[in-house]
Length: 294
Image 1: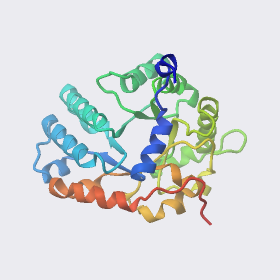
Image 2: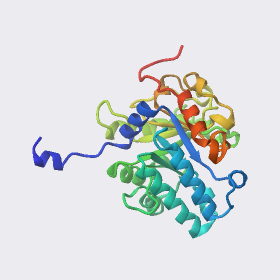
Image 3: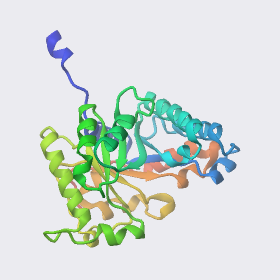
Image 4: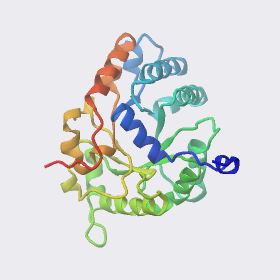
């Protein structure tokens, strides 16, 4: 390779980095959700200092054992500037270990406002830099276009809410859009079309989806999509879904699942969290791409 070629080599996309993380560590993503009750059980104060200590301990326990962590932004945001400072430290510590960091902020807006959210969370060197951001498409998938562009330009990812497991969302997400598709299926289709235009042949797209582990794909009007893209899957652990159900729920897309667990792991406490993460990670052996479920 010439020096000029070496100088122009690009960083792997988020989709490909997520793919590699699953292949190496399996599907588990550890949520960083510092509920007040958890802080108390860990012997920590319910303030920004307690959140920072909690988050750093979770990151230390997760590093090298899983591929992903997912800080829930709201728990930090409620403490104002001190909470955001704590979150910055947690995000930076996690990324420094090689963990892929998903900022669970569920941002969704239009125009320059959404562009500013994208810049805050997905710009290299930003104080709040993460590897991927959760985003809501319910002001229109097109309203996220600037966020998609920003993410792809910087090797970042976006997880678009497609089919969530909370019952309040059912009427909206399973409503029939023009053409007969459900709203969830329309979101999947529009974002997948963007992935098809931007992902290299044979690579995963970097614009992923949030599809809950308690969602029935048939009832939600969903079907497997191409190209593959990571699926952030809440609902495992405390919410009832089990690792051995992953293939039954996600079928041909099981290989792309990032299975999020938080309270089921965090409740092990500071002395038990390493063992809890290791045990949970072993339960999520990587699903081979191309496998199907009868």
